[in-house]
Length: 163
Figure (cartoon, rainbow, N blue to C red):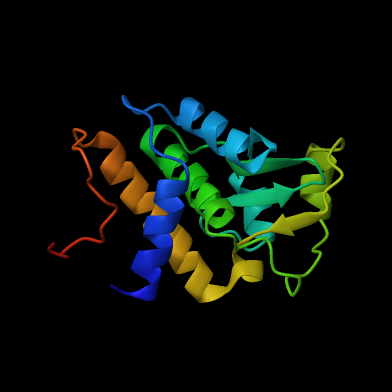
């Protein structure tokens, strides 16, 4: 088992997927697990691009809660994937390291969301390629497993891996 596979499995077991799948129920469970509320805020995609968010989403970590900002043009499965990518960062512990910069909110985003006092704005640049890949695989796998019928004892396995 690869290190990434182990980390993804641990993150997936931390907060089980609701059955039937419901993104809002899952976010509520993640928030309860973390002891911090999570809110969603769609904004124009070009504002996210200023922050270097090619994936069209970012995580704003505040003192007592988390905000997932995502492209307002994203809908359905695309929006769910963007949101789950940011949840992946949360559950994989990507925002806990002291080495991560306290990045200021870009001025255009701050103007759109003036009531946000962010401790840390975590986008693609802050996480690096390895963490971005982990969060992307987490979102992909979560979306796949959310649509499959539930089986007792089934783990969160990467594609192509046998038992």
